[in-house]
Length: 368
Image 1 (cartoon, helix red, strand yellow):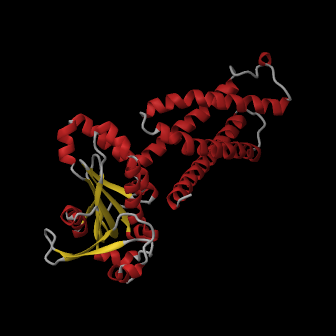
Image 2: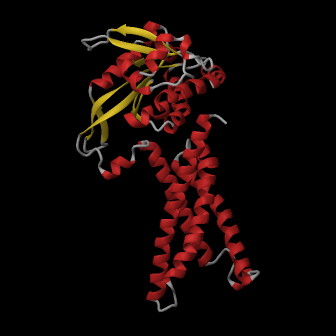
């Protein structure tokens, strides 16, 4: 199992555990509400008993439902409209809740009879079905909102960027090669379908590298990491390599459907930026600083040097690439808007571990 696969499995497991925790919290509130209603109608109820029952039910349901949804269903349903995904989920929940309902009756009474009011057309079952279905629908909505706003979406809720703040961030600017030619050849509608499918294919690589999608601009996409998160385990570089590998595996599919196998070129840089939210309607976070423009200009130099990626010397100094990476120094070059030349490096095409002694300049610089 590859490192990327292990990372994806771990992050999916973490998401399933967060769903479980949310369901346990929801179950606790449900237990409190049920206890208060029973006491309000002068019926016997003990809060500790109610909490215990709902805790175990929620824990089991959260683990079971979270794992099934995140590992098996999410990838299939995430491309569907939310209402359609919920429509698929509702009958599935009917089967699951129904099976669990009859199982608990069997445990409690060692058997059940529909004539005694224990069938599916009872308030007990319908209430349980409505509760778990709404909880699952809410979970699916929150997962989709997280996808919509990216891994930094929680910052919107707590107002982290309500006021401008200084940060050190890594940026990767991706651009598809020969995009104008491809759009003219296949037409704009089919080209849009190509971009949509392409972005869907590369999104997981960005998410699992803990990156945040900053902007989509046509066939360009910019990704950002906090400095600490981006350079840890060389996540920003691994993200690009994972994207490149995935597109190579999917090349035949794109060739057959669009007559073109897309290739991305990337520019990397890091530095200080001012981050903050702008706008009152459709509020958006933006990054302001020289590092953003520099990363974009570095990416524009890929064609000139005949490579699919370029990394600034500043980023190379903090990445500390291990010996398994084959790299080559491009040298110093002028960038638009920069008064001084900037030194660039490139990752060579994947060819297995390469001893650094075979690349004296690159090896020395990678560990400074």
